[in-house]
Structures are given as structure tokens and as C-alpha cells.
Amino acid sequence: MPNTNYEIFPTTGFTVTHFLVSADIKKSLDFYSQILGGIVVMDGENGTPCIVQLENTWVIINVGGGPTDDKPAVYLSAPKDGEAVSSFMNIRVANIAECYERWKGPGAKFLTEPKVHESETRCYMRDPDGHLIEVGEAKK
Image 1 (cartoon, rainbow, N blue to C red):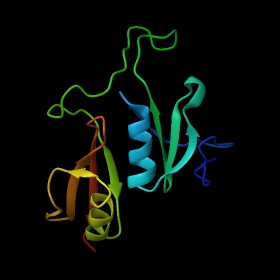
Image 2: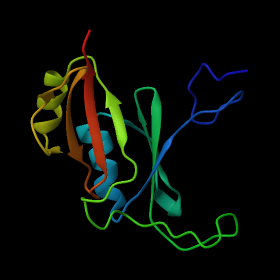
Image 3: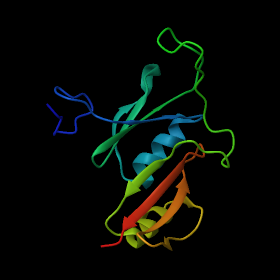
Image 4: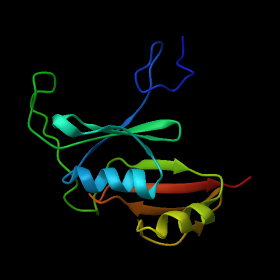
């Protein structure tokens, strides 16, 4: 049965979250809560990951590190440069102009202003660790 409550700890089905590795958890937590307006669910004290609810999903933020018993030979690290990207967050919005101004004001770093494309208007920003985030509004 699908999870229709979108809970971070689902009792049925599953919930998809986005996990980010951060070099500075406090800066990332401030970005996702203060600039994007997320709700802090766990603040990362006592060595636990941070969890921020962004609308209907959650961002889990934690430090990098070496292999563990459940992911041998896997190392987690924050982005080293912004040019090579294999995955990014995509935020779909109802009004891109409004979101652009609201998030730019307190310090979101956008690569460009929103650009009109065939099926959507979109722009990209980076979080404090350099993770790429697309912000897009579909054409109606």
C-alpha cells in the first residue's frame, strides 16, 4: 500500500528523501530552513544527521565519511567542484518569479535569473556546499 501521508518515518509504503553530504552542517541547515523555508525536524546534535522538511519531502544532511558495514568501499563527500554533477535536487514551484525573489533576498546564490524554455521556466542555485538545485515552473 502506498504511503499517502508523506511521513519521514512511514508506517506503510515508503518515502523518498534526498540525502546531502555537507562540509558545514550548520550552514546547510540555515540555508534549507532560513532561506528555503524548511522545517527542521532533527538539528544534528549528538552526531545525528539533520533532517529538514521541504514542503512534501525531506532533506537529510550529514557529514561525509568512509565506508561502513552496510556500504563497504563507499566514501561520502561534499561536492569538490561545481562543474561535474551526477545528481541534483529539482524543486517544482507554482510561481518561479516569486520564489526567485523570495530566496535571492536572504542570500540564495543563483547561477542565472529564471530563463524561459519550451516547456518550463527554470533557473539553478547552489546550496552552501555547492549542491546544484533546479527551480522550475511548468508552462500551463
